[in-house]
Length: 378
Image 1 (cartoon, helix red, strand yellow):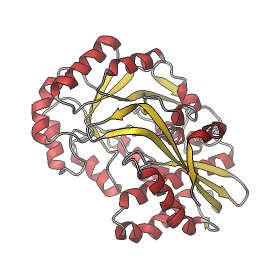
Image 2 (image 1 turned 120 degrees about the vertical axis):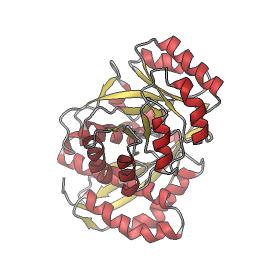
Image 3 (image 1 turned 135 degrees about the vertical axis):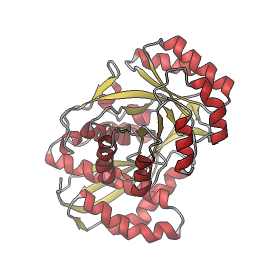
């Protein structure tokens, strides 16, 4: 996996798909689904594709695309890197001061992650191997779960996904105890006792609120409770919360940097860690981190909520790492996901197979999404 890359071109594209039903979370509402795609071309004409996290705020997609074009392009094009990981190190070092100067370490990390995904995809395609195999995996079959169930009649969407083969479901909570519990009851009534249920608070509680809300959840057989506290809360508060419940506690999508993840592992407060490959670290940082998580006796569950390219990359990384984790798949309609993620649309018994095509797979469907493209940033 130390294949050099001579970069000839870097291109960025923004897509936006309107939603009939906005996605509700405890921190805000998403009115459309954005996607920022990165394409890297090497000197031999091979191409790789990546995706940059850009869900929130609503203006984030164009902002990230312009960052790539105005900052990262000059540091990549016409350069030769010893490997994708070497490129990550060089670009991280070359933009670190800029990220601090602009007070935007998050957006810079997201752009670097998307570029990193494209470089790994390029190398796997050039090697003629699916990315999961190129990264050292031995199977393309992975568990999946349906995520993003809104607080308004979540059972309707959950039943649809159950009919498509899903067996695990995650509900967004943090909308008041009465509403949250009614939604969980509706899910259990409609999905049956065999379904696995999880909840996501999206950083919506204080520790005092957690003390009030957890007793009613403790008896419901939940597989985990996600981000009950803010990601910046001291680990001592996370430890206090974990002591209040037998429900496994999960977090990670909003942690930034290796040090924070290692603090999370060492805290003992979390059972599940959920880094997002398009938000921080790319494959270069998350491949070793995910293995560290599993080796520590915890569980790596990739967070993901975006378009199909990042979802495929997340799935291939999970397949390479192994363990008991499952891939997060947004249950809400989104052509930017479903028209691109190919084999992940076929779910059987809560599992999907990634296939054996080079890289993250065939992305010919991207041409059919032109109706959603709002710009190419050069």
